[in-house]
Length: 187
Image (cartoon, rainbow, N blue to C red; front, side, top):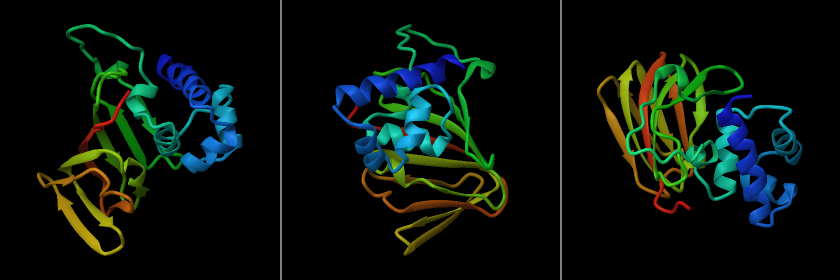
C-alpha cells in the first residue's frame, strides 16, 4: 500500500468519525456502497478515481487532502515517478496528481488521459471551479443533457462552481488534458 493510499484510508476513517457519519450515511452522501467504503477503510481494496472522488465529496473534502501527507516545505519538487496515479476500474481513465498534495491546498492540478471511446462522469466535482486544457486528441463534454462542447488540442473550458452537476466527458479519440480544480471551501 502506498503512502497516499494509507493517507486516504486514514483520512476516510478520521473524517467519517469526526463528522459523526455511519457507513450508511456516508454511502448515501457519496453514492458509494457502504460495503465498499468498509473494504476501503479496512485496506482490502483501493478505490478507483470515481469512488475516491465521490467519497471525498461526501466528506466535504478534496481528493488531494484525502491523499495528503501534510508536507509543509516552501518548495516541493514532485518527480514523475513519485506522483500519485489513479485509474478507473475499466482502465480507460488515468489521473496523475501534478500538484502538491496537502490539506491546505485549495487547488488541485491533474494530468489526465481518457482513452478512445471512454466516458466518465465528472459531476462529483460540482462544488469546485474547474478549468480544462486539451493537450492532444478530442473530448466531447455534455452538461445537463442540453449543452455539448467538442474540444480539440489547444482548446480550454471553464466551469464555475455548482455548474457541473450533470457533466460527462466522452472521448472520440484518446485525449490527454490538464484539469485544474479550485475548491473555495476547504478545511
